[in-house]
Amino acid sequence: MQQPIDMKQELQSVTALMNEFQRAFQALRNEVRKNFVGQETLVDDVLTALFAEGHVLLEGVPGLGKTLLARTLAASLQLSYERIQCTPDLMPADILGCMTFEETDHGAHKLAYRQGPVVANFVLVDEINRATPKTQSALLEAMQEGQITVGTRTIPLPQPNIFIATQNPVEQEGTYPLPEAQLDRFLVKLKVHYPKPQEYHRIIQQTTGVQEPQIGAVLDGERILSIRKTIRQVEVTERVLNYAINLVVASQPQNSTLDLVRSHVILGASPRGVQALVKTAKVRALLDGRTSVSCRDIRDGAYSALRHRMMLNFSAVSSKVTQDSIIEAILDKVPEVMD
Image 1 (spheres, rainbow, N blue to C red):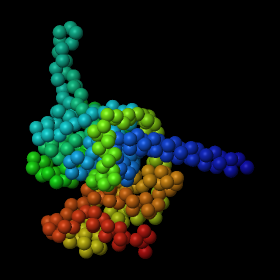
Image 2: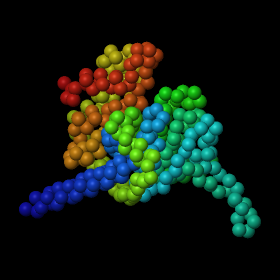
Image 3: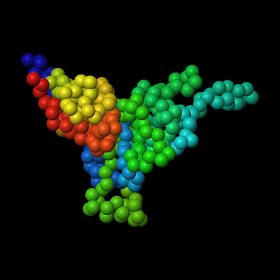
Image 4: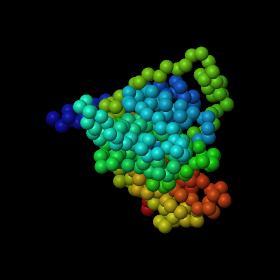
């Protein structure tokens, strides 16, 4: 007779954790939307990456609010925040920090670490493709391992930790395209589009008027870490996991059965693609009030999780075939249940 009571208590506990996450997500969403107009799906995708323990690459032409979105999210969190403005003359030591000699109270000198801006909970890397490959590579360890190495010293980054990078896809002069290894470190790549015509009025009122939106910090690091633990407990059945794996395998030209992939893709998504699909799907499931991931959750995250993990050949570029069009074909051809 004791087991039904335990099951009831467990159900109540799961429901309470789910409700806590949904309230936190909604509170954060409300704060961001005070300052960032429209593009609700984009906002939700950025918040999804935050709770899914991943980094975000925002791509869009200048003036669409990429930096504003990241800065507003940072203001909504009780986390340490740093911004790195990338330029061609930016050096790795400028972002990682360096070892320097400091004078002690007794007149002697000691070797001490001078902290760089990368040592923070929330790091905005603005116009990341303007930094040289050497400086871009300095972020690899930080984004993957949650630590940096300066000289012989390893410095752990504060947790939770999230990098949001922005880049302009149009202007190519003075830029350095991110290599595949760097792109793969981002959990998602999100495209920032033009606002809808009716949203311009509110944008102009907010940016040219007297009153400015007041953003409040609604979430701290401890609560984010707690929510992340809850999200990790969301179930992924073997059927759903197989679907995610099949989508990624279908993007690999040497393993795919799709002619479009085999003729236009040089490099397909890696196992990190499956990880990204599953992580973001868990957030979507919990946000929808479910403790188990569905194939729909996987499909909804396919574009943002896979578009930056596929390299196209010249034939694709000349034919105006994009990563998104290939992902669309993969979603259309790969069934949810494999025979």
